[in-house]
Length: 171
Image (tube, rainbow, N blue to C red; front, side, top):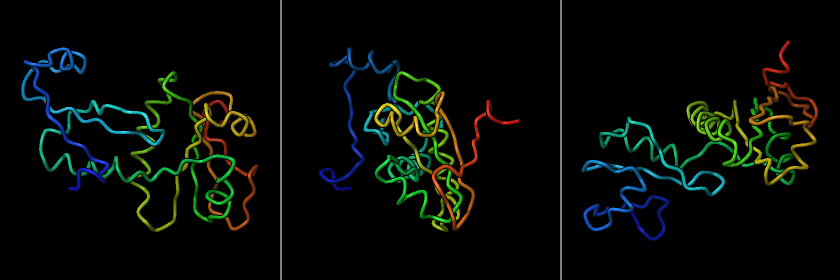
């Protein structure tokens, strides 16, 4: 692992010497493994799951985090990513850290994309950050976060020809 160019960084902390840091990160026993990653929006996140106890469990997690299958979407790249593909395309519209449902949803959405996108090009996932792209989100009448739409497989796609997957729109 090349430490200079890798997305993965490994470190150790001495809780006897830097107790305030251990307290800040909730380290109460030793050894404790804490895993942090940077999400698609550049925010540092802590993985709070309990399944990273063994070496063989950590490697798939690292791969999932560093190889996101969710495309970051905006007005500038929507045409090139969503409308030109003939695959099933699922797009989410979310907000930032101030939106706890969005934070929880992003993790599930990212996991689903990682499990379903296998290089066959039959399905694709994208995400719009509505804090950064407010006017673009308003074009889809996003009334709440997270908001989910789907473009079914098609050769003739238009921006307005999507299926609204939100519970408040389902009859």
